[in-house]
Length: 249
Image 1 (cartoon, rainbow, N blue to C red):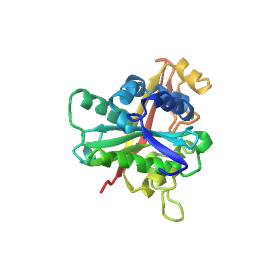
Image 2 (spheres, rainbow, N blue to C red; image 1 turned 135 degrees about the vertical axis):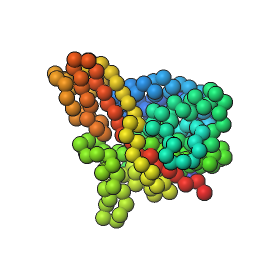
Image 3 (cartoon, one colour; image 1 turned 60 degrees about the horizontal axis):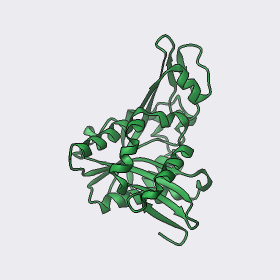
Image 4 (cartoon, one colour; image 1 turned 90 degrees about the vertical axis):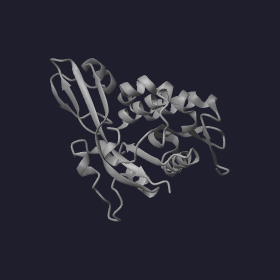
């Protein structure tokens, strides 16, 4: 904390729950808010784990950013990581309901208000999440990262994309780079991290596009193409993310 901003958890300021939701409505593209796991468990995330949800306020107490994370049990073996974002979200909720003691923290999202992007807040938010893991005596922290520039390259396989580097040998992707700068290392691609199935009409509404026939469609904000099956009246978006591990010691 300094004179320019304050970081507070939802546990300390439960009145800020609506502000966290507003930031997600601003920062998340339409179809991302329709992920079935997020729809099913979002309210439980905020009520079960308020100490792991936090918000960054400026000196005028205006929300600048928020971070969401979930504790879960993991044996530390990288091969046994959950399948991705959906899976770790659900595992954290079910672990809590089944009284399974958590020992790890997974990032779920960090959202920066558009007005405050480009000011180095992402690094502050990642460091705060690591701090919460340490404060709560968790042994591990991981993140199923959604690379921020991947939407510009939807036809490039994620496995190839994560190996792109800048001239300084740092990761090409700015969001992966932020995590690496704060002490993370890449584990592997989570091929089916977030799965969003819906009717063709729903997808047309979310994207503002028409899908006259079956096929693969590049959509705004999509890291990979949307697959449309007209006879089945289903559009399937299966998003790969990248598992990164943050070292807490």
